[in-house]
Image (cartoon, each protein chain N blue to C red):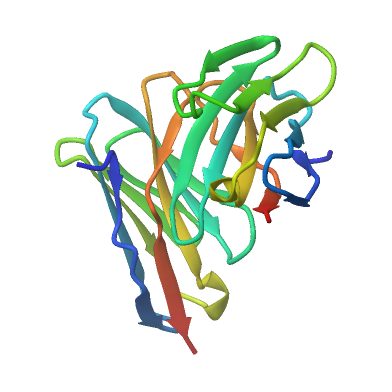
Length: 111
Length: 113
């Protein structure tokens, strides 16, 4: 079982719709959860982090964490073509800062 | 306030040569990480360093690869006797402390011919 699992996609959504990206992780000791966005040929960029169960909102982005189900998700409201990128889920265990990344989900927002 | 600086951006080496990749963390960041990304694959952890210390090198191949973060100067990822399978994008990231998310550099694209 992979430590961090994501569907590689592509996930296609129409412009203006909600994009829902999902991630599961295997280590119950995981405490920090991150979402990065990576445009083709570029480096990853941190867009959200969450530590506690529940939702965390930042502009059009909402991160959701359910530790009991070992599940973390990212919602993007009012999706724009500029949101088209690969979204990487990342997890770290405890206060130790080795972060494990999923393979990423490719999102395509169709105009 | 410069971000994480990596150089070179692109590096071409012939098989058997050495590759040296450099990374200067963001100002105020003392944690440095190296990751490798192959086409269509995720980021794979290689090594985690703090000044003059290797904290975790569990992702480093046992041979040919080494990393350092000296008291002065950038962090260096060194690959000796490169082979074609070493061709990849190598990303350096830094963080201020153990709870922060990473800031990534622009990466070094290594091509071994």
